[in-house]
Image (tube, rainbow over all chains, first blue to last red; front, top):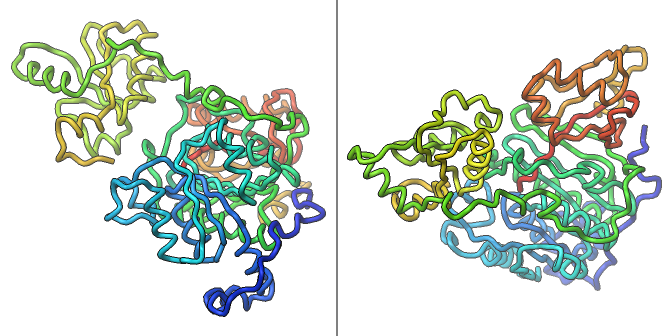
Length: 395
Length: 91
């Protein structure tokens, strides 16, 4: 059953550059002496323009391997800042760059590794208004973004422009990697036609991620990129590899185009498609600031008021850092209703999570169950740490 | 290369393979299931009956790939193999 392998492979994606210099031949010799790559393959790499979405967990090894392999032009899209909690897995960034933009930190690392590579920085949040224009200048897109809205956007924009997209994603101990190229095989929409319900999605920031997965999946993404550029081997078009680090297993899933799906002709409103823009329109008086909470806790300590402070995050997060005097009821138990018997209806309550979105969701759910005296902490425990308890660990 | 090797025509039932959170929900990589109702809806009901809440969470957003083609149509007839794959977007 070889239906997943296109009858005629796409062939090399990029034409060879002019001749290599002597120092380039020396630098890339370990690739050049592999017959399948050779001088011509290396010249294709030199001529290639590759765009990397996200300079985070996957983007880190991806950028380093692309630069080391001598990909001539590397574009980076990222609008985030290096945070101490990134360094557990985002191996391109250094502790000296905490607080700097990831764009600056990553492009400096690329320049230090290979001065022959041209980097282009795209300091934007990728969206429907800018994606096609940015992608147009590149041969190939590598998607290491961290949310569903961007995943659909990247895959659709690549499909519209007829460009291949190397896709990788990670969560906890699992990784997935594939190549989407609409001309030759399926896209992200053929794998996941519908965005998951926003409330059912956990991010790596909430659920955690096994750091080394970034290297495993990121290196596999660049292997595919180099194969596409040079036209060697059998790519992951029509196949998804699924890696499980606990099991140390790779498994393969064949994916074909969904014959019933409409062709992708225009970009969508991805925040709406993923339900992320519709998140919980709450009124201002549903919110409590860190300063207000600190004052309320002080009054509670003196018996001048009474309320429950409830942490709706996961157990690991609660153990990592929690606001003193809070008790722990994970969001899932509130949404499923399992925790409701433990939540009295006649008490005032303040909910909090990491940054405020899960607590808002818990608040909406409790309202639907008829609870009235519920508020939530704006900006979550991160805001509490910034404003009230700066010595507590951030994550 | 599991892909082809495990499909033995003489074995009864449909090969159902579980990935990521679906494997966590079942504690299995794969199994053969014999169904009275040989449709995607029939399989869905069987999985919910066998694995309860954790499977319900997986199926809320997970994909069924029927011999490599994604489907959400409960009336779709099953072929030889179904892959159950939940999405995640971390990077």
